[in-house]
Length: 221
Image (cartoon, rainbow, N blue to C red; front, top):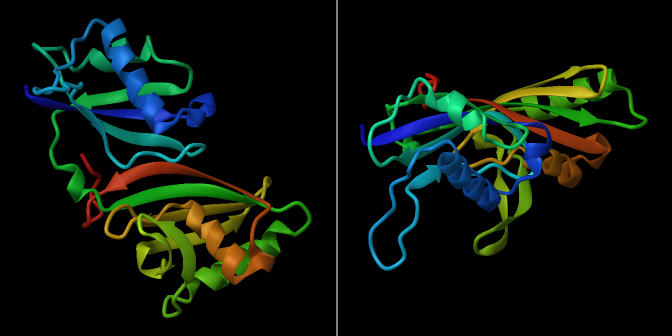
């Protein structure tokens, strides 16, 4: 076995661990569980681990993907349990297998979320949100930060599916959005309302990643 792939969850208090700290956490977990990571060669060697689509702080996920290389062989069936035993609260490894596709093939993310409104009725907001986002012909141009500064972007092409339902805590969101080329951060769904339809913008929004897909909507592995 050369490269291996982990699937893990990041929930609860662990959502506040930054991407850099998560990388350090993973490295320590391998060491504590008795696995030796391979290091790159050269002047500044580093462990050969990489996480697909780094998660924003505060976002939950049950489908995070990490590739890694080990020195020597390992029992991949027992590895998830061994790693989980030494992980901080909220990080749980659910699977380990040999990769079937490259990170570049990951195209869509299934997401869920909740828009909370302090004084506005959830049923009324859900209906208005479905109406706003269902007009597939209308662009949703927003201002956002990019690597080159601040610019305008139409997020409509990055939304494959999106629907809203009234719930006990607020308005539940269910969607499938583009993961790469273009990339859509779920938080921009709320930002778009603040910029385009502030009367529909939530007082608070939270999101979760549920599944990763290829372009043909097969599960990414």
